[in-house]
Image (cartoon, rainbow, N blue to C red; front, side):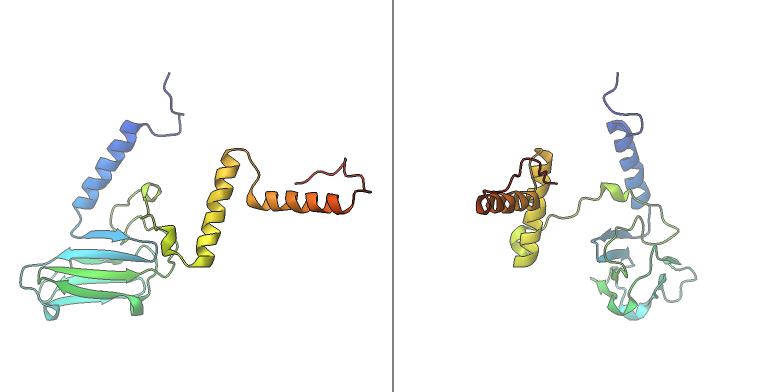
Amino acid sequence: MSSHSDNEPSKQELAAAKAKQDAEQAALPYKWSQVLEEVTVTVPVPKGTRGRDLTVQLGTTHLKVGLKGQPDFIIDDFFYKPIKPDESTWTVDDQQEVTITIAKQNGAEWWPHVVAGAPKIDVSQIQPENSRLSDLDGETRGMVEKMMFDQQQKQLGKPTSDELKKQQAFENFKKQHPEMDFSQVKLN
């Protein structure tokens, strides 16, 4: 009997899907990566290419990248989701590749592909870079630490920080009012 459920892919199926995805992505005329807020696209161009030799158009919903004088664009397609053209940039690096930094309008989602005509990646497999707690401002860090503590407590079947606070407040109230009967009280 296999150890995985029928609707969960096996390790072999995951590996095959990853290999297929990697092959599809490698066949694209560009490389791309992303963080939640932006997508970076790198397009190889002939050595010696300068900015004036290129046509790069970043619209809210459409991307065009090509060499002037060439009939076909390297990329001419619609973005997966709308972008912020005013916050997006492009540069030519070492006169051999164009790097396009695309600001997502919704900076809180992973894109399965940059443009509509490209093969998709499995966004559920994305491992975001770990940011260190020390990189966060005090308020955010406290919130993240509380969430991590609460998640750990739940996994151990123990009360969360809010439940612990409630219990403590209730205990203090009981001490202040010994004349009251609290035997029927349930804390949720």
